[in-house]
Picture 1 (cartoon, rainbow, N blue to C red):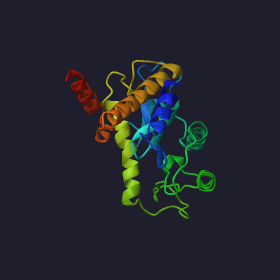
Picture 2 (cartoon, rainbow, N blue to C red):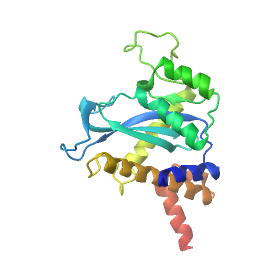
Picture 3 (cartoon, rainbow, N blue to C red):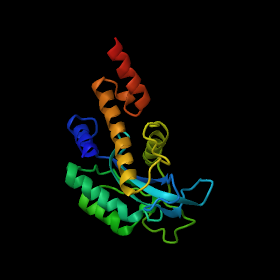
Length: 227
């Protein structure tokens, strides 16, 4: 509820409009091999090992602010595809989101004709999903390349994952010293809530340029208190 209320506060206060969205996932490695809820799954594109033991964190992100709106945790062996529509449906129901006609970028694991049709007909938005011609035999209906704008959306969530996995050392989101589904989910929630608190602090300080810079906005706020 803390995370949901912070997202709602961001919408009420104009921090985010949440009309241009992106969904992607990132791995969370286990701290202990004996984690009862973790699983062995395929790693992302450039890791040192092809398999990883842990979880996958599916995140719905606002492209405009680079802040999270919702997330779902899965075992590392789960496919990405089933998580896109539930995240979007929950966001629409809980936050009354209305996607813009040009919104909706997804990682390639979320590809599916039914999903794209649902996004176009129900949300009235455009789904932008990358494709690898070397892996996909059926190419009809797929965009041939990324545009510069679409590439920017893709990199925005990669930068977000980079921030939450490296900057929030207090919460230690990558390979956290925890085990079990509930403990990992709570750690993700606290980390994501911290990004929203930093964004709200930047907005209240009149520094929208610091919304994506949690360390800088906290230093700026502390400096103001000292003065």
